[in-house]
Every structure is written in structure tokens, then in C-alpha cells.
Image 1 (cartoon, one colour):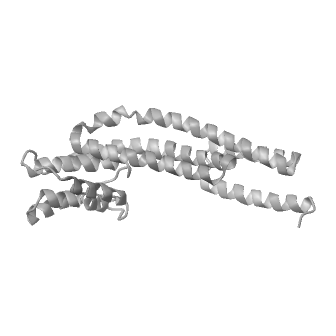
Image 2 (cartoon, rainbow, N blue to C red):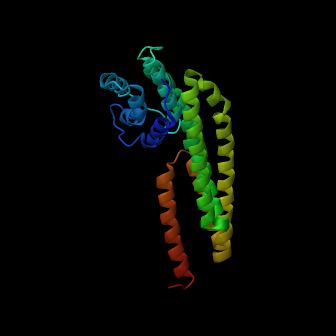
Image 3 (cartoon, rainbow, N blue to C red):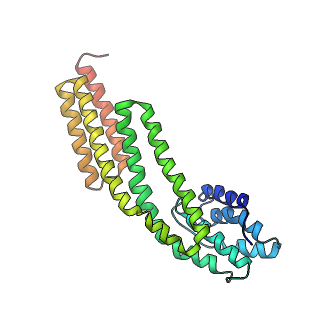
Length: 253
């Protein structure tokens, strides 16, 4: 039997909560079982078969939460074939096991180390140039790309099953990730230049020196492996301290 659209969309909607019940033993297994449950209810009217199918999907599962949409769609594809007697019950589990690792690597490389830093750098540089609307635009860009890819991956997984690898490969996400990283670096440079310019305009020569020195020191620290969050916190504290000292030095309150 084939699934009606409402059951498919309920499963797709639930995949947004894949990590809501993350645990050390099965990681995303509870979230995956929750996501596929509407499809299993439609495919297996018999309670015993439905319980057995749900139990299959309570095994270990861990993948990038966005790329997992392709695995969810493909697992439903295989469960349809199992329900029709065309495949053994373990086919959906084998599909999940084969793809979760490679898709996790692709998703981490594209979303976490490329698209998200690019959107953050775009928001930072845009805020310095245009104000808060640029931050909103960066958020819309990131979430628009993520949502559209989730929909596409889920649909392709459901329609093509094991052959979903081909459309994922055609997206060429590693190449796109490389371009986004270069763009993020350029935007970070632009943001640093804007900060230096503003500091020079407000504090004079001392501001130029301090801002330029902070930008260079921050870049060198990150290049040597410094953690971003502690470095950002230290930079913020140092900036506040220097601002207070500069204000007092210039005769401020």
C-alpha cells in the first residue's frame, strides 16, 4: 500500500523534533521512532505488526538533524515495501544504518561549518552597515535553505529509497560549503574593517590602533585553535574595560 499525503506530512513535521528526546544510549532513536510513527500507523493496521515495525526503529540512530529527512523518507519507502511483502522487515533498518554516517558528515560540513558561519558573518557585517534588518535577512536565508533542503531530501528519500544517494550527490554540498567558507571569511574581514573604521571615527588614532590590534589578535588566536566562545567573551570584556578607561582618560563620567 502507498501512503496518503497527510500521513507523510505528519511524519515530515515530526522530524523537526528528532533531537527532542536525545539520549546517550540510542541518541536520536526515540525522535526517529516518533517521526515515523504516523506512517507506520497507516501502513500497519494490525497492532502486532505495527508494534514490531516501531520496535525496529528504536535501535541506535544518529545523523545530522537536517540530512536525516532523507533517511526518514527512505525508511518510509522501505516500510511500504515491507508492508506489501516485497522486502524483509530489516530492510528499513539496513537503509538507516548505511546512510546515517555519510549523511551526518555531509550535513556537518555544509550546515555547521559553512552555512551557519556564513549566515552569522553576514548578520554581523550587515548589522554594522544596515542595522537589525540585516540580521533578520540572515536568519531568513539560513532557515530558508535548511527548510527547502529538508523538504527536498524527505521527498527524494520517499520516492527513490536507496537511489536517494544520486540526488544528494547532485547537490554538490561539499563544493558549496567551500564557497560559503570563503564568503564567511570575506564577510568577517569586512566586519572587522567596519569596526576599525567606527572606532577610528569615535576615538581618533587610539581607536584605530586598538580596533586593528584586536582584529589581528582575534584572527591569530582563532587560527591557532582558540575556542570561539571563550575568545568572544574575553574580547567583549576587554572591549568594555578599554571603553571605560578611554572614557575616563578623555574626561568622561
